[in-house]
Amino acid sequence: MVTKRAVRPSLGTLIGLGLLAAGLATVLIACSIPLPSDAAVVQTQPSPFPVTDASGTVTAGGTFQIVFAQNVARRDCAIENPTTATEALYVHADAGSPTTANSFSLAPGSTLNCQAYGILTPDQVQVTAATTGHAFVAKSQ
Image (cartoon, rainbow, N blue to C red; front, side):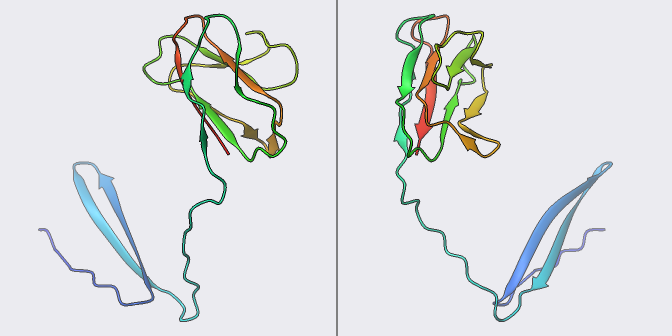
């Protein structure tokens, strides 16, 4: 037996919906939690920090190339080795000389966020792969 019930929230009500799967049956769960009358309204706004897209391809396989120049004002950055890649993408993010041994190795579909554990590197960020033309996605703020 299936029971259907319309949920009509009033202003100031938070609705939570979820699915619970047990065995062969799937049950829709709905809950309504009244919000206090003085609850703050949250408005989202675009970031005042524009995103720079430095995506591209490896220009010479086996040779590191700069993706992001040194920038002490950098807020964050991310580099992804696309899921369509067939090899590792190496990312070097410090002032030393880059080698594949001292760089992060990103398997296809993996992403490296430049801000890890609350530490953000202001140093230049470089990438390479074994094959010329290897695509990568790179964004920075």
